Structures are given as C-alpha cells and as structure tokens.
Image 1 (cartoon, rainbow, N blue to C red):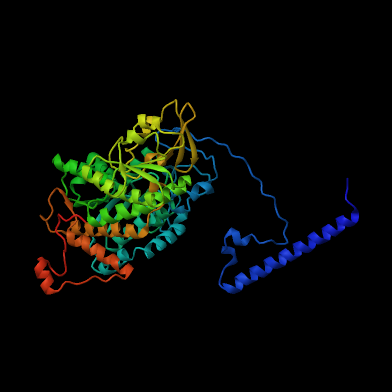
Image 2 (cartoon, one colour):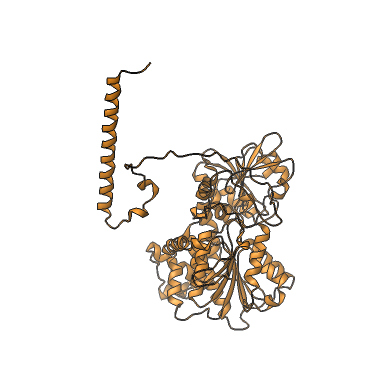
Length: 549
C-alpha cells in the first residue's frame, strides 16, 4: 500500500536538507584540514581522506567473488605458480614490512623480463624496478634507527677502508640490510647481493638498491630453482672477481666452494652470521677444506646477546599476530630450544600469559629454562596438548611427521631458526594431505579426517618471512658485520689463517659503545688504581674472551 503523497514530499525535503548539511560539514572539514596543513597536496592524501562526499554521482562498488585455488605444487620445474584466493592488497598487508609489493596480477618471473634502471644498467634481477622510490623511503626510515652504522659510515668515509673490496653477499634483503650494504659501498666496496631466504625479501628495497647501482638478484616468493639461480648470477659475472663474502646461512659459501673452487680460493675472508652457516664453516675447517679465513659473527656477544635474544623477543609475537591473529593468553606453547633465540621467544610468550614448555638437549640450557620458570619436557609428552609449536634449534627434523600427525586440530607450527630443516615439511607433501592457502605465508595442511594444522612460512624463518624485525637491534648486528669485513680485508698477511675466528673482544665493545649514545647512557670510567687492581686497560677490553655475558 503506497504512502500518502504529502508524507512522501516531506521525507524527500527532509532527506535533501540532511544531504546538504552533510556536504557543508564535509566542505568545512576539508577547509579546516587544508588551512591547518597549508602545504599539503590534496592529490597525495590517502583514500580515507579523499573519500569526502561531493556533488558527483556515487558509483556502486561491485564485488566479484574470487574462488581460485592454490596450486599444491609448482606447475613448472623450479617455478612457483600460486594463484590467489584473496586480493593482492590483503596479501600485501601481511607481507614483510607491510611492503609496497607489486599489486599487479603479473605472475611473470623476473628471470623472464629485462629491466633497466635510470642509469641504463640491467645487471640485476628484482620484482619491479619501478618500486625503487618506495624502497628508498623505507631505507630512509631504517637509517633513523641505525645511527651507529651511519656514524661508522661518516667516521670511515674519508679513509675508505674497503677500497678495492668486492663483496658478494647473501642475506635477508630488507631496509635494514640495505643500510648496511650502502655503508659498505660508502666505505669503498663494490657489492653484489642475493637473498638467503625466498620469503624475506622486500621487493621495493631490492628495487631501490638496484636503482642505486648495487647488483641485486632477489625477489619475494622465489622458487628453490630461482634461489640457486640468483646465487649463481650474483657470483658468476664476466669481469668481476669477488674477494670477500658476507653470508647468512652458508648457502653462497657452499655454492661457490662446490661450483667455483678457483674463485673460492681467491677469497680473502668470509663473514658468517648464522648458527647454520657457522656450523658448515666449522665442518669445512675440521675436514681441512677451508682455504680462507672466516669470522664467526653469530657467536659474537653483540650478535648473540642482542639480535638473537632481544630481536626474537619482539618479532616472535609480531610474526604470529600478523599471520594468525592469535591471542596468547592461556595458550599452551612449546618452544624447541632454549638458546638465545628460545629465551627471547619464551620470555615474550610468558609475558602475555601463555603457558610455555621448553624442549632441550643441553642440560645447562635445560637448567636455565627450569630456573626461569619453564617446564622442560620432551616434545612427545606435550605434542597432543599444545596450541603452538615453535622451533629454534638450528637442527633438522626437530618436528617429525609422526608428531605433526598427533597434533590437535588448529595447532600452529612455525620456525624461528634460520634453516627450513627443523620442521619436516617435505613429509607433508603427500597425496593424502591437502594444502589450502589461507593468506600469504599461511597454509592449512588438512588431514583426511578433517584435522587442520596451520603451517607458517612453509617452515622457514617466521619473523623475516611474515613480519619485520626491530631496526635498532639489526643496527648492532650490521655494525658488527661491517667491522668484521673491515678487519678481515685489512688484516696483515698471517694474522688470520685458514680457520674460523671469533670477533675480537675489543671490537664487540666498540660496537656496543656506538649504540649507547641512543639512550644517552654514560659509562663509569675506571680510575688508575681500579684499573691496576683489576689488571685492565682503562679503555678495555673489560672482559676476557672466556667470559660468558
């Protein structure tokens, strides 16, 4: 039954009046915004601010349901071809560093495209060189919290201690690493770089480095074949002979040693920062096959006690929150390994109310866990109970297929160690199990009975694959790496033999002192009498090499 005409006219008139008032308010707000920020370019405002009602007709947004399935396995040999089940913008919001990853639907591998930077060079392979401007902004943000590395850059800039150094690097390619790379360049080095993890590369940062003249071969989401192709192109280029290696995990060192032995013999020094890479170096040394000196940065105090501990204490929560939105209070979590990484993870989870169990092989670390209030167990004792399983041992097959089979529905499984060997992911790629992509770096692995286990980053390093890490802590590690490279490159012949060395204690203390200024910290100075009593130099080193911090 239709309404009376008079009432209809009254409602139309009232609606017109409300619309006009709404427009006036919007115009008034817009004017206030511009007057307060007179230099703001309205064209640069975010969509949230630009969505002010205007006199133009409003177009209705059309939503198209997209139900594409993810390929369980690469469709081409060595190439990853994953279709999207959610929008790219949603995927990007969970990507490393909330990166400005290319939102186009172009799935063409960077290997199949030729790109050129503004200087005319094509000696790089990244996702999209046009993202360089965004990457530069991220690098500039990182520089603000890496003042110690910038200070080192300024202090040594005129001396050029790395003049003549040709450094080939294999690390995570993030804004923080870019500050390190550009510091090495400022100190005189030539650099070629690739990624040590197929998921941790920030595409826009890789583009910014390539635009600046650093030959970068990396992009987020490489296949295994892409990974080794990038390492090979980083090493093997006409007219360029590397003489220094900066590695994270030992993959580049291993590749050069196996495939380019003559190039490897001409290397003057290797700097390695991960427990996995250091282990591989010690294996080469023990077998008498290490023909160059190497610096073990992973076991330096400034790496172990800061990057491994404090970095993981914050980034474990960030990675889990971004990928799963999990609440930690009351959750049962098992952390495999109670080294510095494990200590950081356990402390963070306990602080948010999680019930934390620890597995350990080392009685000393096990006792530390007990004294810190954690129950030390075998994984098999709690695998059916826990909501989250985290590995951080540097070992292999820490979580086996049998244990994955016994986990309860909805369990989250992830890895905080460098290598992807800790969780037996390969055993999950069988016909009876179904893989379902939830979002970037998040997979449901579904058993025949319907049980689902949430696997993060396919068992690779969680924090750098799924979130970010604190810039300040990485400044400590990056400064240590830079000084180690300078030390090895400039050391007189005979100081370092063909073996693996720890960073000199004096250098560790220097790295720490550079970062104290950030906190306006003031150290107490020893008197002559006190220094004599302790048998120390007033300027350090203050602890013997055997001291455990």
